[in-house]
Length: 192
Image (cartoon, rainbow, N blue to C red; front, side):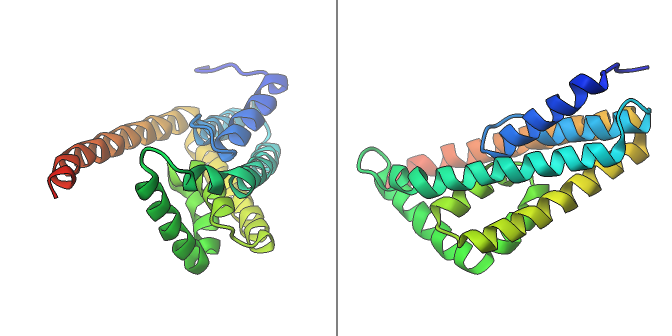
């Protein structure tokens, strides 16, 4: 046995990690779901309960993230100070983007690392209508929890951990490339 996680610890840990990530914290919620799905394959957790716990935690976390963005995120981003022009331009782009693609972003963003963490807060800050957000959020959370947990249960705990490790590697490469691009663009912007 690769991992021993008692059910009385597994479900609350899954709920806490998925909730936190969905609320906007950079913590490994999807990794927890992959691990829980793998543990379900080994009989340590029950797959339907893993899906239910993850989906409900994602819905609740995204709801918190949405209201944080709606109540204070916009004012925080539009405030005066360092980087104000950049932040205001980002808010304008987010307003345009969420007016056109908000439902798809909330639904499909759940499968995209990075987007999953900020989609709800950004939807709130962009003032996406609550009903549209809530429906897309609930449908996306159940679809995401079902597909990720089921995939993990099909490949088992070792396969699920390999998928999670690959996800961390891809995230690391993405962060490094983004950072390098930003560093290269910063001197050009300062000269222009």
